[in-house]
Length: 152
Image 1 (cartoon, one colour):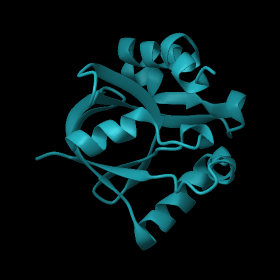
Image 2 (cartoon, helix red, strand yellow):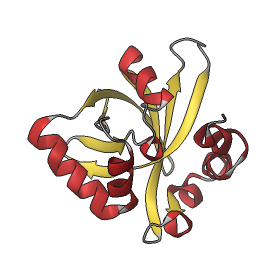
Image 3 (tube, rainbow, N blue to C red):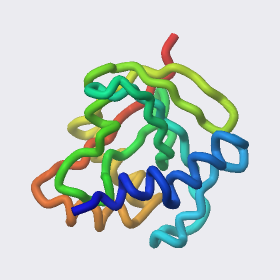
């Protein structure tokens, strides 16, 4: 059985969005979420991680929200039963490269918990309502919310 997220990331809409973003950060920054059930253009960033097993660089476009001290991203993987590979990679490395529009910077990572996670989940699912569907689809898996804080 193939993984639709991996397929989209290598040759589908995720790959196309990543390529547009890398060619023109301003043009790639806003992603039209309407084709995926979202409300229209939403902000995205590029998250660059290093594979914990492969050692290869991976660049993933992700929706983000601004939070105190940085940015929040959601490790939803469309509600799949397992966390996305990039989430496992950041847990293993702790520091990543992030691009927001034309700004590129190093960031530390941490997983939100408790009241902070609840508040950010509400913010993110209000911004992109399909996150609520992903939460139901994920079953027992709590979808992680990752905070990216620019490294000093």
